[in-house]
Amino acid sequence: LSIASARGVRAMRTLVECRARIAHPRACSRASESTRRAVRASAARRAPAPAVDDDNVCDVAIVGAGPGGLAAALALQRQGLDVRVFEQREEFRPAGVAIFIWPHGLNALKSFDPETTERVIEAGAIISNIAIEQLQPGGTEAEELVRIDVAGWSRRMDLPPQIGITWARLTNALRAGLRPDTVRLAHRLACIYDDDDDDGAGPSNGGVTLTFEPPRNGGDAPPPVRARMCVVGADGRNSRVRELTFGEEEEDDDDDAEASSMKASSSAPTPEANVYYALSPNPPPGANGAGSFNELRFSLCDGSGISLLDVGRGNLDIDGDAPGGDSPDSSAGGQLMFGTTRFSEPARTFDTPERRLQHLESLFENTTPLLKAAIASTSPAAVVQTRLYERDGASRWSKGRVTLLGDAAHCMYPSLGLGISTAFQDAVELANCLSSDGGEVRGSDVREALARYERRRIPPCWALQTGSRLMHRVLAATSERAPAGERGRSGGERGRSGVDLTGVFFRAWRGILWLLGDREEERALTEAETAKKAEKAASAKR
Image 1: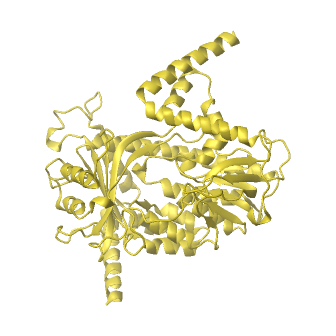
Image 2: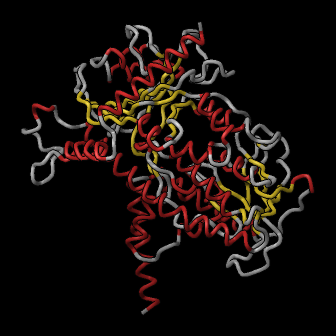
Image 3: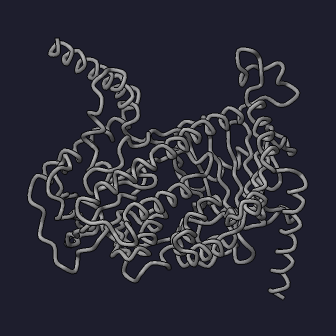
């Protein structure tokens, strides 16, 4: 019976994988290549680890110099550990992408490094309000669905502010708090050698060795590195650490046909939507002084989600000429991030950057003056196009002395903007678990510390990832919602009972905010404080 059952499972898995290849040939090709690399790496790990010079030994090695990896390095260095961060990029360059960080995320950073937290806040723009609104094609007046008084929340709960900031400024501010030579560029991970037994029952005094690939432009590979305590994979949604450590397990985790179907469709990140973003002057020329000041505004219109985020100075005075960096027409004032997600648009390619910008202009030619001005003031080369990705959270984060952090463990939709804040919380928990009575854990205790970190972080991250997935679906449905006067005739966004589900969702959201203290009088106080700060800043400039 067991043999027959195994044959049936293999036959069903083959059928599911073949059907998946027909439906998603590129995704399956990437998954197959990922599996082949994992098998090669597994064979390499069976060989003895290469010798490591004493100069290349540290306590903790972090792979990935994004915000999560840099925050983890800061937290662990504050514990007195020797930490090194290895990044595959050969140089840091400004990029057009910008993000916002929730108060609880900055509070996590502040818990172990108040000075760096202040530097991060100063590098961005304080966000007082978040507004979600719906626009109709050809209309210039928006229906506001919900408004969140973030500044009021921060004040009532004694938390840092929420900020909008460019990726370049955020990572620069985090790196400035690290010890010199912490971050090593041009280190593309090749293999991981964990001296611990696979079952975690053997001796635990050797550490983990990392080897790296030669540079793409030629030359010798960087020398191998040994981490006495552990390795942290903070290398993003396409994590090489996750692939090398759990690749085979993620492929063969379940033997039943239903699990095989799930794995065939989600073993690799699946494209979901087209995303375009760029940095524009704030206020943009031609908007009659209108701009996005101390706010994040998210407009839903005709299958798109359009965001305008104040990012302060943006990348205006960061050296470099990458997309989103300095431009001749952006020498004064600040910058805002213009981004749009086309929820249902098929994958598109454009012959030239000018064609891409023309496509964006055609989408919003009959909309608000601010949106039109933001697009019109953007240079073609500054527009970045990508795809929106989500990936199932890892069922395990730690194995032996290797663990995951941030998007490598729980890549989620950006619909709630929780990625950076959650990674900062991961960093705090990891540092807490790797310290014991004021000192670092050693020996076999490291594996238990990483297991404890995993147990504490997986449940809340699963909840946040699920919430982000739900919010993504709500926003996509709302972007196709009929105008207010026609909702009785259209059932596209209604349930079987004919109820406007998206309307109910946002009304419930507003009610919850009211119950929790987000009210008109609180907003008036926030506006008064914002005006006072703006007047003080203007006086300081004079």
